[in-house]
Figure 1 (cartoon, one colour):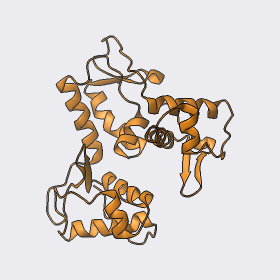
Figure 2 (cartoon, rainbow, N blue to C red; figure 1 turned 30 degrees about the horizontal axis):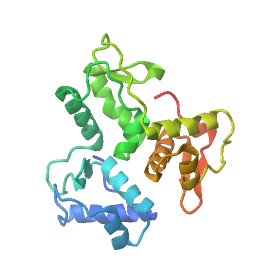
Figure 3 (cartoon, helix red, strand yellow; figure 1 turned 120 degrees about the horizontal axis):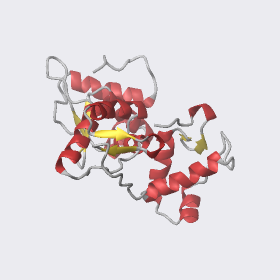
Length: 238
């Protein structure tokens, strides 16, 4: 776990994170306490959704908060002698280990991409890669390069999963970017336009855009829209 979030930073997300961290250090929020919902945090701090999500992401990546499936964000540890909480990378590894041990993910099954896992847990791709490393070292998963990662052992027949609607839409937009139909800096279609073009729900569109951001293909500017990222930010093989 790193040191505290610097109070000298002034972005809205950092201010929210610093305030929540202060509550944790002071014992006002204790290990196991559930944080308020995003909408409630927006009202409390008078900030937008992006600032709240940025704050929670910082706290997760520093190990102060964990995301429990179906339970929201929970305080992982308080300051002042309490045992450190599980970091988000440890949580990702634990969840995958549990899925493999229980048979929910079977030998040879293709895992979600690094970008998809990053989107699910709302963390950075490098953090996901760090979480997957011990699973690879233990032989629980293995990489096939561009074909992705699979559940071990390596000699098990590969079983590719069917792409989700989110992945299908994101892949279609990615191909447009690769083909030069969307140049770096270009504004992508609006949510409603994507819904019409791909025949999907707004939830699917938002998931696809989040996946594109996690992969490095796009960036979203509040109140302006989503734009194609600079070529230098485009993803390498993960």
